[in-house]
Length: 223
Image (cartoon, rainbow, N blue to C red; front, top):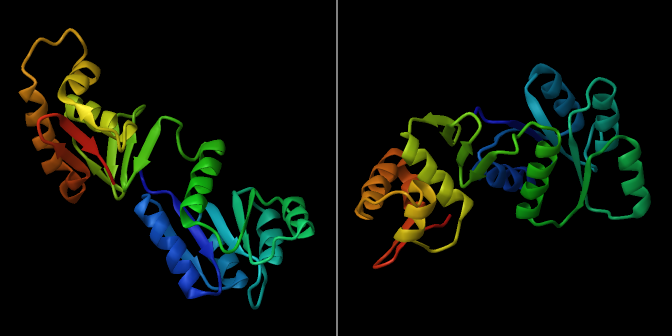
């Protein structure tokens, strides 16, 4: 699955970098604009932007005007960022067709979660796609990407990685992995899991460090 592109618009470079860093870790491609005029130009030049994160207070063209301009031609999801949290501002935002409204200061993790939720609602991200730490698994397409690049996995390696992602942060015994990935009718040796984990770690490169060994028990996937 190719990376989804998000436009981040804020006149503060520090804020843009903060948001970009968190979105990039989640596997999104990010383009930046420092004011509304630049944002409108970029949006109409690049036809593949799936969501806009838009600050309200900006020079040249503020967030409201930018939103109005884009809404004349597109229903792309828009998240508004503002330093103010007055109800009338929020109502104005929703009247203009803003999808979410987030007041500064905000938690970048919450912002990313909102982005995920909106893209799922708009069907830009399939419901059966799981994305953690730059690893994205699309179970329907049986496809894995790491930081946007396709990775070739065998059927069992794919199932094993999907099981790890779905159980992030949970200690999994070899027996539990065997039962869930190889099913109860598998009568082989649990060492087959160690072999598959070793191959999987090699194929996913640096992300292989996310698969922690719990000595004498099994494994835990942790970002």
